[in-house]
Image (tube, rainbow, N blue to C red; front, side, top):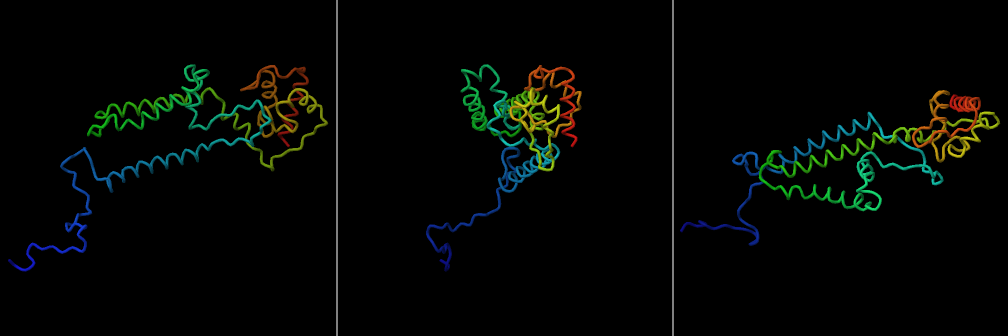
Length: 256
């Protein structure tokens, strides 16, 4: 026997003497079934996430979220609304089967089953195929969730003037603060008809602020008579002449 033939030297008996290659396996013999996690799969996921992130950031720049004013605990008439990404859950609570005595179904059971189903989708449909028609259960559940979320969000946004209310309740910078002539006839009419909802300084309490609006006198008079949003009609009880003075007063305050 030649010296050293068949002998292997290792420093620790627990360490295998066989060196394993760090190069990922070649999956070309199994097309469409699997691939190396690094870098193939991870690179695809990173690219998809980057495209979504750039699109989302572009959307926020083009259409920023409206900013409301400071929270006022004395504004009993204020109706809070959730952020846009929770509007679909907000709309769900308007249905009879998810509100009133069944409110637990709307806030716990239905959302819990929906999100739980999405988590279980890969285990319910664990076939080897990766094409959509080869994963009918997982793809069907995802399409159902996506369609429901988009539809409920659309229904909620189309029936709620949340953008208009947020615009009306946005904070007023100090540079836009105005001096109100509280000795004028217009302010006296405002005091008798509008102060309880819009505040002494027209900054809003139960109703939105009347500072920083751009409506004309005719539009303001129409709103006072017919109402708008959560404001009911016939809130103004004075004469047509007083209404015109009130509208002109509000416009004059916003022109200063």
